[in-house]
Amino acid sequence: MNSAYIGKLMELAEKDPDIIHLLADSGTGYDEMFKRNFPNQMYNFGIGEENMVAAAAGMASVGKKPFVFTAGAFLAYRSMEFIRDDVCFQNLNVKIVGMGSGLSWSSLGPTHHTTEDISVLRAIPNLMILSPATPRQVVACVQTAYEHDGPVYIKIGMNHEKEYFEDNYVHDIKKSDCLREGKNIAVFVTGSILEEAVKTCEMLEQDGISAKLINVTTIKPFNEKEVIDIVKEIDKVAVIEEHNIHGGLASIISETITYNGLEARVIPIGLNDTFAEGYGTYAMVRKANQLDAINIYRRMKEAYEE
Amino acid sequence: MNSEQEIKELLELRKKIFIAGYKGGMAHLASCYSSLEMIYAMYLKGILKYDRKNPKWKDRDRFILSKGHAGLALYGVMEEAGLISDEIYKSYLTENSLIGGEPCMRDSQWVEATTGSLGHGLSMGLGIAMALKMNNSPAKVYVMLGDGELEEGTVWEAIMTAPAFGVDNLIAILDCNNIQKMDFVEKTIGVPNWSAKWKSFGWDVLETDGHDMEDFKSTILSENNSGMPRLIIANTIKGKGVSIMENNPNWHFRLPGRKELKIFKEELGISDEELV
Image (tube, rainbow over all chains, first blue to last red; front, side, top):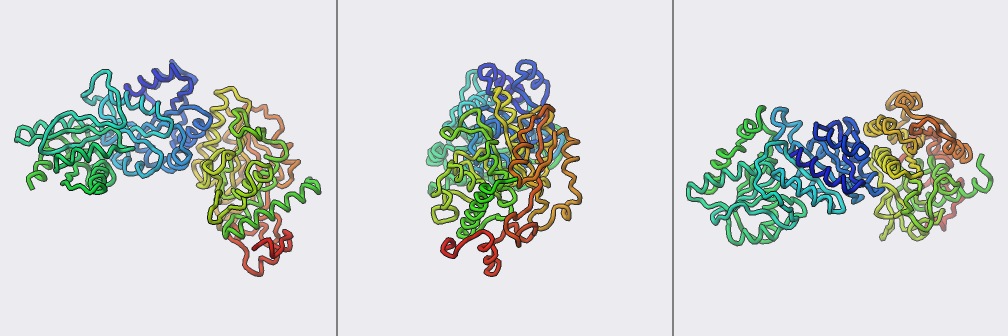
């Protein structure tokens, strides 16, 4: 995901000298590559995220297009007030890119997990929130963010996400991607956990439960109409997210259903108002939190049959 | 030294700020009065370069009031400079208020940064200064901070990084009135020693009397060959201009009671009719 991000940013930086890549000591080899190619378009602020976010707002007020890039947890939580006051309230053209989304920093524990960022940031006006699931979606979301003149937060995972999209995939902010048709249950998913959701739907299929799988990339502004249309056909909805179910995609979909006077059973599959348990590989930590495909399948089937 | 004419104009401004704050029912008067001469000098004594007809002139100097609670002083000076109307100024905290207690970009195109939460302005100013350098603009960025505000950690992130980015177009102005909301700064965080602290971070540090516009102007505009950002430590008196408020920590965020009002009226030359 990081290489997809930097690759796309380099493509944009080549065409547009106003693109500025900002880091908080958060670079990798990919960023070194950026620095070699565009030495005047990258600045490392050191370990100080708030200063970097506020400075990005200042740069944007002069017409620059800063892309701030570091751990999502340090942006969404530590820098939250700076995102709110300096970027969003002033409605400035700053892109905030949080890497290591969800549980992907599995070995480091909850200080590095980004499992409440949607809840925290979606409460801030003027902020577009994008949650790509695969490298090609990252590339497409960076393009969307670039074209949008205003604040955008993009949450991206780490590496090795499986690709489910075509090479020329284009992100449409008004459209989610239906990856699988089905009629018994609608499964909404967002972010890197898509792979587990795909496997879950395959398992459900073997049990004769036909699942429609919708990958949601635009968290805000949320396209209510898609959910409304689906819920009119299917009254069982599951939401899979590597995120607290409080305030995340499950909340957004539940709100959409109730605000529009519809009825459906919503099955939230995420962290149930808890910090994640366990350490180890990404797969191990997902399993420890019942967010691997087998556990998701069990939880979903149990709820489905209630 | 301020001229007699300037002293008169500043007294009128203090009066205007008080009337707006008193009628509105809320104002950080003491903070407004400690920074007033400096803000006045920025806009009306030729420190800031700006184009009256084009607020977004790309090479304009920027002024950020990081200690946003002195917003009524900033708006008052802006009104005096003809950048906002008297009508807007007088709308302060009325039913259809067009301005509030803190400077807000939404409310005026002349406000360069929305402030209010302390510890944001210097970082925003740093970003602006960096972007202006990228554009080879000769413009300067002035950021006024309070000394209490320096207790915010983020300020030190900006103090640390600004010299590393070589932004000699960034000038911080410290409104050093020695008082924060509850008490004297020194009683809160010990001896501040601002000059030594900022110098050790690489800043070019100068000191001035923040109420003497001539001294302030010559200090702030003196040549800076250090290649580093500059700090102007402006020694000021919180509440300057009203005897009972001067250098008294009780006045950070309050309006006078009945007995105190008499002193305000006498010393600022305000009539009963003007407060109706």
